[in-house]
Amino acid sequence: MAALFPFEIHTPYRKFYSDMVECIIVQLIDGEIGVYANHTFFTASARADIVKIKDKKGVWKNAVAAEGILEVKGHKSVLLVDAAELPEEIDRDRAMEEKKRAEDVINKGGGLKFEVDKAKISLARAEARLKAWDMREKQAE
Image 1 (tube, rainbow, N blue to C red):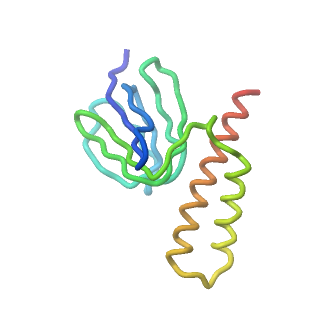
Image 2: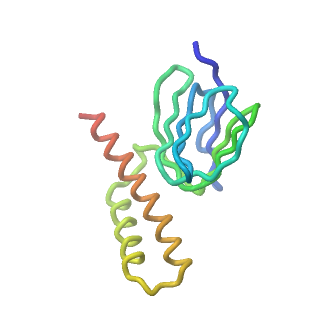
């Protein structure tokens, strides 16, 4: 059996996930990283995307997480994000609307930089939500 380590995902509103895991895969700003037990300590910025979690039974699960910070320490790993949800919680129509609104702001041009930056973050989250929704639908087939 593979070594396990505690992993948590926190949002400002709740502890979204907390359990012993075998592995996590997170999209960082500069690429993807896989974390196993006894990983080197580090802190890094995480992109909005799908977080893959291999649970203590060896089953892979997905969660959609907004941008945030991944902290890997000796006693546990924590992902602090603005929002997180399971694929089955995603409303595809709402994610499509969020994507369209964000693209409109980005493509409009001439907006304030913070508005465009905020729209880019919304776009990344919407795309991650749609990717997770599509993956869930393919698994159901």
